[in-house]
Image (cartoon, rainbow, N blue to C red; front, top):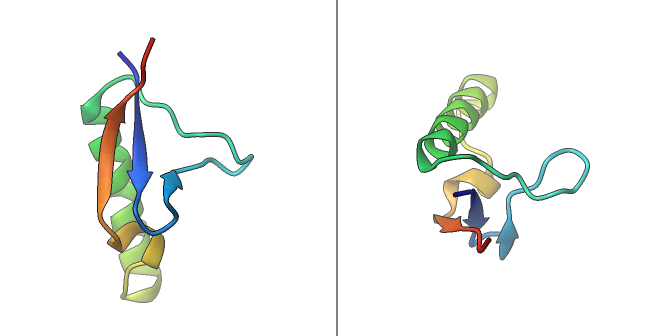
Length: 63
């Protein structure tokens, strides 16, 4: 199964630098990505980026 992360701040799935949906192979990969992004944003500015502090939801992609 494949998963995407939906952001309620942007009302869209999280995107890569090319504007494509970020697609993960497992829920664990989604959580690792979010943990990495939170740590990066916190160390960079001592506060979180709005895009990542809003509620997020992991959605399963339909095959």
